[in-house]
Image (cartoon, rainbow, N blue to C red; front, side):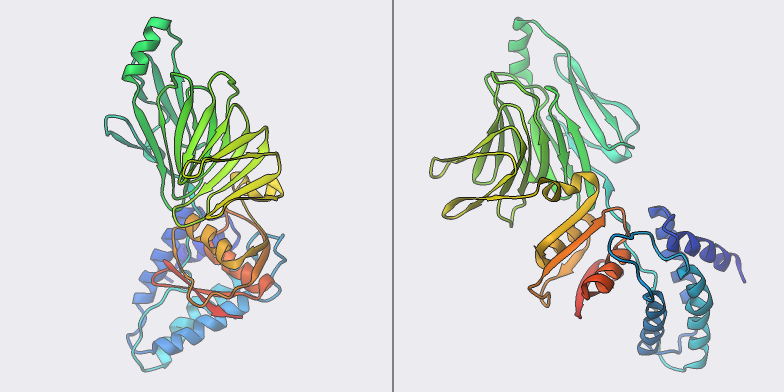
Amino acid sequence: MNENQIEFEQLLEKYTSGTASPEEVTLLNSLYNQLAEQLPSAASSQNLDQVENRVWKALHVQQPTVHYLPVLRYAAAILLIIGLGFMIRFALIHDKDIHTKTVFNDVAPGGNKAILTLGNGQKIVLNAHSNGAVATITGGGSITNNSAAGVVSYYQQSSSKAEGKLHEESKSMNTISTPAGGQYRLVLADGTRIFLNATSSISFPDRFTGSSRNVTLVGEGYFEVAKNPKQPFHVQVKDQQITVTGTHFNVSAYPADTVKTTLAEGSVTLLQPSTGKRQPLLPNQQAALLSSGFTIRHVKIKQEIAWIDGLFVFRHTPLKQAMQQIERWYNIEVDYSNLPDVPLDAELTRSLTLNRIIEILDTNADLKFKLIKNGRRLVYIGK
């Protein structure tokens, strides 16, 4: 057994015990591909598929319920015995063309990733930046970053009224953007906290001046607005504006989706500028903006904001909506063409690898998916 095989087995044990880091999962894939290249170029891709199916069927025995999230402990032993070794022996016996495929093709979950674009156009990759100050604020103050915790904070020095006028003239707009598979938290100069979900962006000034506090959101964000009745907080999203003085609420405003605003505590008022319609919200209410205006329904807050606690919570959620969340978090492409119109009930941690999500959907919801195109495309293959 060569060094690559030994390292492969060690990483595989960590992977199947649920202790492998994203970097180790990537290395596991790389080692597997190296070992697979040593196979004779003489077995058929169809035969290799049959082997993969046998390996994964072995893994699917006695799957845990959806609430038991750790990976099966005995999976490593099964794979070490019948996985790689059997595939090599199988390839030695069969005499056809092979197109190597990766059984262990997996996708790590998302994490703290974001880019901060300053008013002068400078871009800072927050997750790659060391902790501490990353920039200064014109007129006094600083921007600090904690990449491990995924938090960037704005600190404004107190100033006199005269300085305040200078600040108003020189303030600049900043933008934080998260990619697919990214999330980040932001503390604004007024103390407002914002949780930014994957594939989202928020634009804001480095300090708030004047009679209101204004930000613009694309995607999804959870807001904990610092109270200041004299300076209302406005969130601008597509086709509407949300006004609060101090409250906790979630806004989902992805470009292709219906804008949904969910209130956790306090009060908010929604405005549709095109019609002038206003809609107040109470705690545990969610407003959706349709062509006919706002529709209101009562919701369970913990389900709607589960993502900020690192969870997917689906309660009779249309499968397409659930897969959109998974698509954004794992930075993959989902093929929706054959997706059934069925509801999904599941509670999953967002720290699971994508293959683990696929296994749970298969076992507990009888929904079968397969990763193709080097693990970047997820296809529904039936029940």
